[in-house]
Amino acid sequence: MGLFDRVSRLVRANINDTISKAEDPEKILEQAIIDMQEDLVQLRQAVATAIASQKRTQQQQAQAQSEADNWQRRAQLALQKGDENLAREALSRKKVQAETATALKTQLDQQSATVDTLKRNLIALEGKISEAKTKKDMLKARASAAKANEQLQKTVGSLGTSSAMGAFERMEEKVLQMEARSQAAAELAGADLESQFAQLESGSDVDDELAAMKAQLLGGTTAPSQALPSAAPSSTTPQDATVDAELEALKSQLDQL
Image (cartoon, helix red, strand yellow):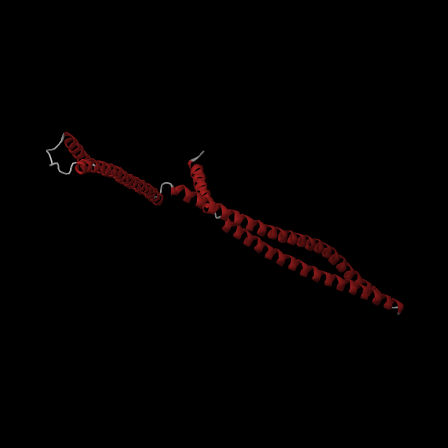
């Protein structure tokens, strides 16, 4: 293979590839319909021309046949009048016109066949154009759907790596952290509240117990004083010392709470 052939094939391949990439189905279909309609216009003009020619030939044939019949009558008239030469001349004219009419009849038959063929082709082309228009609409709809789907797939495919989706993911993580901190703070606040109530409840029990002990002590000291009113107060007894010690211990526990 020569260098020129290789270069030529390479150039044609690149041109075909460029054309294939540049082809838009919608535009190509529209142009195809336009081309078919232009062919339809030309075919209609051809049919109209053929029909007009057929009508002219038909008129010429009818006129030639009429002339032939007219010369036939004249020949008969001349023969009736005894003028054979005139009759012979009329028959000669009649023969020319009859031959012309026969030739025109043959041409007319050919033209009629041509017109019929052109009419059938015209009807077939009109049907193809109508079918092509329907198919064009379907193909354009499919092409539009394919383009939209391709664009959608590209958009969906780019969402995972786009900065917008990354921002959404970061903000979602941040909201989750804020919710976790809020929940932890609520739990801590609830635990602190529970501990405060527990201290209040425990403190109430201690106060009640302290009040009861004080009542017992007061009840125990008033009885001897009523029994012995004249007795003078003596020094601290061992019982009082024990009670004081317990009171001091209770105070220390209360201070530690």
